[in-house]
Image (cartoon, rainbow, N blue to C red; front, side, top):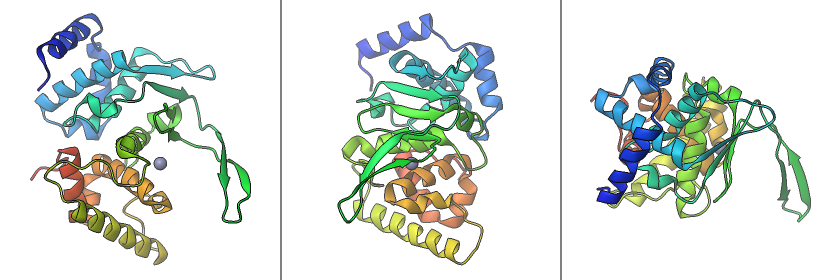
Length: 251
Ligand SMILES: [Zn+2]
């Protein structure tokens, strides 16, 4: 329960910097994931998005200009994952950097022989531990149909709350760590088999990079194409429901 002071602070922000009705309607209209929520969840999401826009700094770069509609859309997607968790799950980081298009970070990695390489891979998004979230606007704008770069990067941020992004975010008290590991591991292998057998993958095969990417990709599908995820693995759908405390599909 938020304290009296927190509620007072929330009310003040909501009064002074509300999301405009037009921007809110436009955000709802463009996303099935948002339309699946009931009216009271949508109202709570609007509150969270307003608070996020106040608390975090949205930093467009390379000439990108963001109007209030774009800011609302981004904040709303970012808050969908934490609708039932709360904004404090996004503590420890403060900014979202937004490129107009894919961006190429220069990253160093050390191979098995101990040689340092520089990698230049164009990215749609990134999340640095305790650092900013980085997004490409064109990918944000084209969220839907199972893909959502914002939910993906936010999943990494949630995952990093207890260390590196390894597909093992801090689970709630009543959740079983053993079930989580078994279910995610099993679904990972199932996806691997499907991809190798040449079947259309139910989840983005990018998730096979490592368990951290698998959790992020599964989270995208959970919110954007929940039926497809549940058909693929009802157990995975169940674990993600327990973690996010949401059920995108009617019972
Ligand atoms: Zn990722």
